[in-house]
Length: 372
Image (cartoon, rainbow, N blue to C red; front, top):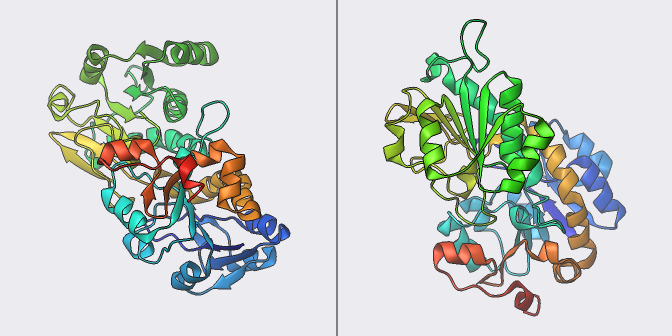
């Protein structure tokens, strides 16, 4: 198979879809790999590294899209990239379609077979290709929140860990999944007073057992969240409904109950955000203020630590890249129902139910799409 890896063009996105090690594996399996010149520089990989691994270096993204049977990326294709996709081509990347009708329409119009990292599952009900970036984003969230809390950035001027005689920041993490767990660990490690909210009692028991009281846990309810918002210095939104738009758990009216200069970090912004006042921001302009509350809503947080994030993502995606290339997408998805769960569009049909519900679009069963 001819596999192509273009340079990411989203604002301040420094990750790359294939590492040199992934290229080497694919070439060993008999595939041809094309990488756009300079694609790996933001993650610390030179063109020479890719050439040594067996890649053909290509000057333009246009050539990558024109020649590739499968395009492997990190972030959702931007409009100029979507215009180059075609029927019969496989796109393997993060998509986050539910809150993005423009992208959905373009992918359907192109006829491309799009498989989304964030909806590929595993045998335990997890999301193995989303998990590495959730871990990275979760660990980054308290760092970014601590930065936003600084007075010069519009925050309250509160130090996460406090100092002797002065209490630490009050941190609320909404959601006890992968993002929330890693956010809570890091925030507690910075010395903050952390409370994690979740609706799953087994998950709360797990967090309490494993972390031994390093942070507090509470069952998530409207009343509990309202109570914690009043005293919070930093709130991390870490709620995920796989493939679907995130629920809006903090409304604009709630901001009036918070302390001026408190910070909201919305890690769910890729799926539309879990705060009503959230809107996507970029690394070069990451924060804005609504009703005195600072919002950090960067839609590609792991891009800030591109080398770590690229290697972690590559470790997770490589087996699936090889399966798709070795077998073709149909056979690979037929052999692996967890990979089939990642199928979002094919030949002009939407094949993921949560996106269909969010956008009011008819959905073709992915099992029927295999026969198209």
